[in-house]
Length: 187
Image (cartoon, rainbow, N blue to C red; front, side, top):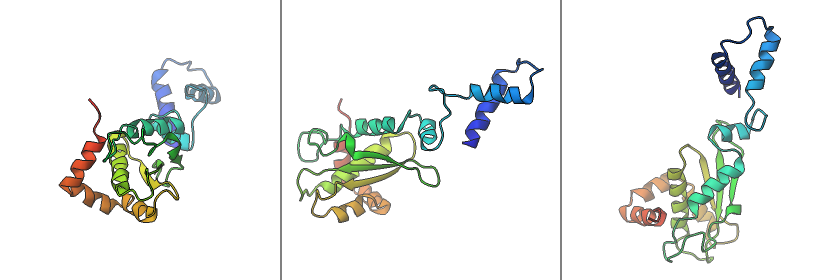
């Protein structure tokens, strides 16, 4: 936040070099801080400042962006999208508090079509790859099967949130081809 204020103050200095040289330091500070206000007339801080810095108006804006990415993922078995099958849904995307190192955290919950879905891990992998490729910035993704929606949800949740397992899976050419086919955009 401090870097944001310093940047805005220096921008206001460079943009107003012809300001009144007779003004007091207090009046100058008031002038500069009033110029720092954003579109809604307030200085954004906390989690919203991070989202604003990434180019989003709010957590809802980020949520909608991620949903737009996910809605086009095709089911590995059926000729439908995950949105058509209600595997992914807008209410299943949660923007959480940022990490201590100021990285946005997004939790994505999905609901396999049946409690014994054998492709739930592949669907989770597709979700992860699509979001990571689709966003121009780094976020921490937590992807989970909806509580009680799958017989082996705990094991699958571990797999799709383990960086080493994800990397190993994407090195497998057959699995990588399956993922690519599911996440490619329609032409």
